[in-house]
Length: 259
Image (tube, rainbow, N blue to C red; front, side, top):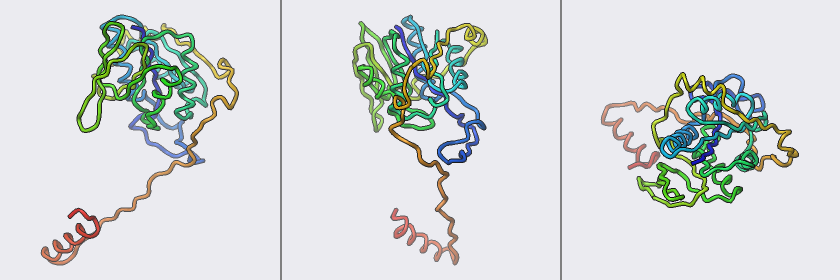
């Protein structure tokens, strides 16, 4: 089974985020980066399928040169090769433009499964995978917790609301968006890190695509990012315990409306 996994580099969870001067994003040069968590689970799902059924795992990533960090990490964990769509502008694309870019990077690639994370930790649109499937004309399913291949098809387990799950049978090739927690993530071994240095990373630049500025123009724009203002305050209820209790009940009933 040949699998392509889309991975994204995002700001590390423990990074201290500061807004850029124009307040449209964060100061990217001052933080550390890591692989998007849902994408890490998509990669883990692909590697487990490869171990059980054979085949290859190819990672596909779009972003500036620093995205090579997460690409090498994926190769060290067991991916066979990688495709890097490299340009500084590729890290600030909306879901539709990103999907079009990834679709262009997949030209000439043959695969049975295309996996993405459910959503990104930075923007959280949860749209890129579904749009990519539509652009490629692939059947797709979202919020996947388990994948079982059989007889040229796959059976997938979708997470629904309220603790419910749904099993769906799909033909191949197909696209799946993977939910975090599908399986325990592996660490890269020392041998894997050494092997990653010799694995192929195919670099595709903005010039290689031959696109005009309008071809990757965002349909959505982030106009302003800001830190939410604190509007809550602490109130102290004076008086005797009986009086304080009566005032507390009054506030819970008429202001908080929880009684």
